Image (cartoon, rainbow, N blue to C red):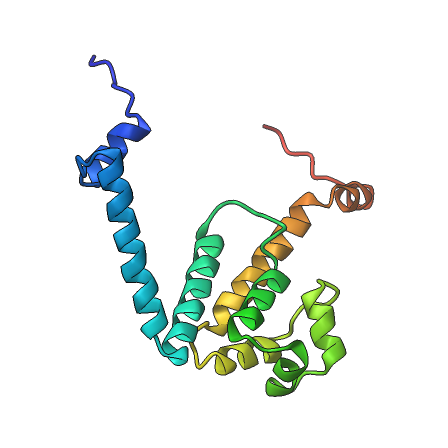
Length: 170
């Protein structure tokens, strides 16, 4: 049998990234030039294109989180809703008016005191001009509920006492 060779991170990077063969001063100069070009392009972007780029970035982060097997309390519905509002450069009162939501209900959503209903998820989809679908918002909520279900040890202990288990032979 052949002995398997361990592939290092460096091997992977070299296989997928073209080497630049630049000296350190040349690399710094190239990085600076690239940053200047990026800065100029960002300054030339219209506010609409900048907003769209921010929304696409948020959608991508949501998608990455939804498809990952990692459950992280940080990435709750409220986290992504806050990110969405911040991307819009709106204050919370104006945003709540735009989606016909009472200020206190928005506050409860933003502080994980309330879960969004389907109406809110649809409003967010429509408000984003369908840039971030209602299903993305729903999947974030479902992932949060899954984390809560699996990590609430006290609930598992209390519910175990209420159930008579089947005697299955293994």
